[in-house]
Amino acid sequence: MKRIVIDPVTRIEGHARITIQLDDNGKVAGTQFHVTQVRGFEKFTEGRPFYEMPGITARICGICPISHLLAASKACDAIMAVRIPKAGAMLRELVHCAQIVQSHALSFFYLSSPDLLLGFDSDPARRNVMGLIEKHPELARDGIELRKFGQHVIELLAKERVHPSWIVPGGVNEPLDESLSARLQAGIPQALAIARRTLAFFKGVLDRFDEEIRNFGTAPTMYAGLTDRRGALQLYDGTLRFRDSAGHLVEDQVPSDDYAQYIGEASCKDSYMKAPYFKPLGHPGGLYRVGPLARLNVIDRCGAPEADKELDEFRQRFGTIAHSSFLYHYARLIEILYGIERIEQLLNDPNILDKHVRARAGVNSLEGVGMIEAPRGTLIHHYKVNEDGGIVWANLIVATGHNNLAIAKSVEQVGKHFIDGEKLHEGMLNRVSAVVRAYDPCLSCSTHAGGDWPVEVQLINSAGVLLDVIRTP
Image (tube, rainbow, N blue to C red; front, side, top):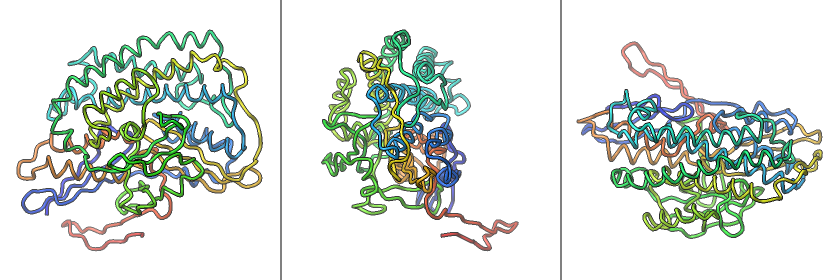
């Protein structure tokens, strides 16, 4: 049996490798998706004061620190047992929408567009952001400007682009004034224009990728995401909804405190990333997906006019429930449009200028859960504290973790369809990496393993013969 190793998987956040086993006929017999890094935030935060958790956990990632700040702060809100002022919640949602826009722009324009615009089989030396700038300068410029818009909103509101201290337990540190609101609104027309152009362009080239759409992780699964009480998209707040592969509601309006009744967590023997699953179906049968595509599958509508129009068109083309992981790219662009529209809606609401933006309290509950929709999917922070407010236990279920089982299954499908061991070429392997990129995994965020960490030590002699193996369970 032959083995192909893709190490590292490129154009993702974090470190991973893929192992592909070929049988004697050169066909794919099996695949493994390995996340090869481990970080111990859940453990080394024990003993820290609960109110430090937003600042500490934001350091998990430099791409989506806002997501961790918000989930951590919401968990701390629950420990304090406070309801934050309306303006504080609106400002949190505003900065979160900016985070969604800039993160999705990074994924689409910087990480995935080289495949989509230069071709999966193009020269790998030129299949990168520099090659994209050379061949499609206007689109590359749009990507830069759109990400700049999201980061600019974060910087103006939170005073820092990365790891800001403005989001705190109980709300935010400072209110919004009219002059700053006007500056934020000034960038919206250009951002909307870019989002519309990019959607129109992408829809125009989709037919080129019919084979990828049909084979990039198309196995029917369950889907999970947050909605409001009317079933509309909710990124900052809301309750958890699960749909099955046929679109039927399985669970709805699950509050953050009850997530553990429905989500279990398993360890993987070949990865440091844990594998959440839908508890009623067990592991691994309870596989579900989260993120942009999953959110479009679980919601009834977006709640913003242009995004709702695009959602209708998306469903006319691919059905009410779309299974192809390739369509994560399409869903990301619809969410960019929604994020910009939602920013405009929030800024036009006079309540956002209220000066009361933070509630203050001590420990009123020994446990708190914060749940939001990060760019890559549902993010859960769960803390337990002692009477003095020190963390005694923490659990993080990160978006990419939810997708762990689905990513592995997608890698296997793409490998079996595209790889021919008798006529191997780089474009085949690039498609295996590309299906991982479709999920836009954030592996630095996701590797906070619960329970035992699976470790294997192999003793191999100079001839390459395996002599012994030691494995922790």
